[in-house]
Length: 209
Image (cartoon, rainbow, N blue to C red):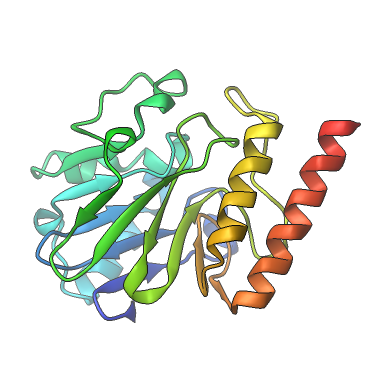
């Protein structure tokens, strides 16, 4: 569904908690962020049809990171001609090659919107958020969730100290709106700062344990 002008959000409930939320930026260039698992693709396809967004209109598939629950359905869009974008540091997670390596660029214009790629390692080495200045909104992947818990750091390629630095970076950015990889979207600058502080404290305790 349309969340803001040119920005669509497909947020899954408990039935698809093992598949990421998906976001679409519908502009002169159309981005899909984290298409998710195969198991949720039929639902995503139906909702995109309701919003009159055909698969063939997607120009860029962007992955916040390369865990299966975020990228398994990439092929459904790549076979229609979309290009693949992610931070190449995540190749240690999944041996794929991006058409667009976002570690080499900071900004990308979709037409009316400016996307800023912010490298936020910790959950994975190449984890990357998208900040949309026009909406003061951050598409955050698995950096932080609505309960104030951060993404897991006990997986291959994860790092507690990198996660702390990434959370601090977003705390300093202080967005008004966060669109996470799982769970509900949350808003309110002060509340978000408090959640990020909670996440930093959680990881710091874990790192010192």
